[in-house]
Image 1 (cartoon, chains in turn purple, blue):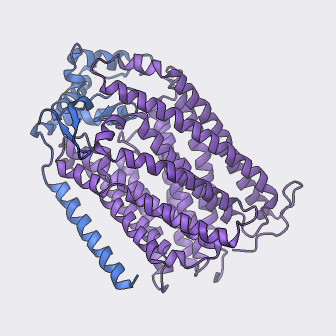
Image 2 (cartoon, chains in turn brown, purple):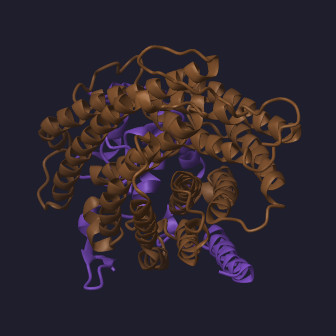
Image 3 (cartoon, helix red, strand yellow):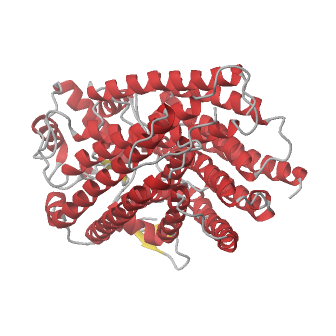
Length: 458
Length: 139
């Protein structure tokens, strides 16, 4: 590290805040899931219209802040000067202000009212401004670096595409989009789909970066197949969003293009992981390294979600799954099973500094096992509900919506219980990671954790 | 992979993306012209958004999962315009009662009428083809 004066700590600020956001996300998610079994729970105090954006926004901030923290962490490998540090801090401060404003607005019942990540458009300026600092700092750090690995390309793509699609998401404020209901929905889901693709580029880039650090293999991230995967991912980011709107009365080419592009991105990603594991197997599994276990665990969820995504991208099947909890299962599977596990790996690896984490390994390993079991249970219950709703919505003689929802109650109870399990497992994981960080940072040695070496970086 | 090849692929993808996006922004790709919202419907849409109705309800299967899809609630048999107003004012066991004025309810109803005119959301209107694609039964 080439720090000239003040130590660089912005990456850790991002990672710690991200973990707190993750805890908030599972708390809000658990509260929201109560509505499926006790519909009048908190109805007139903290209603579902408030809980859903609170949950989604916490999740999005978790992903974006942890991903940003991971990328900022990589700056330590190259160069950091005061300007870069100031930019990273400016990004953090602007986003922190934005978070306070956005969460307060939800509690006060002020909404943007759009689908997915929503808040009033005037707050979007904060998010874009902070991200602009991120982009500029990234270019200042990496523009002059020769021979970029694939993760450098993925990070830059993620940062640039996020900015574009985030702005695109607000085109609805212009009458030429807002007045046309179908065009508005088309553009909204075009930008939402690509927005997710953008942060996926950041997260998968971090997975590559982490793999490289764990295995010591620098060739995989520079291989032709890795770049082929990257370009296929970018191709999907740009054109594979139409599966959200197959049933929308828009021009058929929107559906056909998306169907043709399909979800090949996952196949290549899986191939890369497989190649990396082969390399790793020959080198031997790293002893008691929790970040490896998080990455390894995400592999299994990639497989399940690949299968689900491929099925859902076929229009003939999509008409059964669209608008059902199968879509929710896919969203949960990718967000928790893939993004969250990778980012927990990133957080645990980079927050411990050079501490020896061996003693916290069994605790984290146990939480990971519980997390996987609960996630599996939740996805199973959501898939059953989704399939049953799919059958209901294609049935020529339908019972009422209320009757249909009531008949799913046992599965919603299973989903709720799994959600509580996830709340405990994820909170437990975050507490151990944060405790490790605090212990390292304050240079204390506490019985049962035994951190022998202290933070030497930054 | 050579740097020039990477840049070439990147430029091709970026140009394609820009052209496709521009086309989607500017062309009229809605299958029905009736999808255009008038002033009252636009105001109704704002009220819809301010109350975050989308968190529970869907249009064309897009939105929340706690309440039903409302794309064609306006024309659903036995419902009608009065039904929408009653639901907004009184709520249900799950849905809170919204304190809206009669004018606001009329605007939301007009917005829902326009959404209803834009097309049919019921997946039973589609049939699968051998290629795995779907076709609207009305076509």
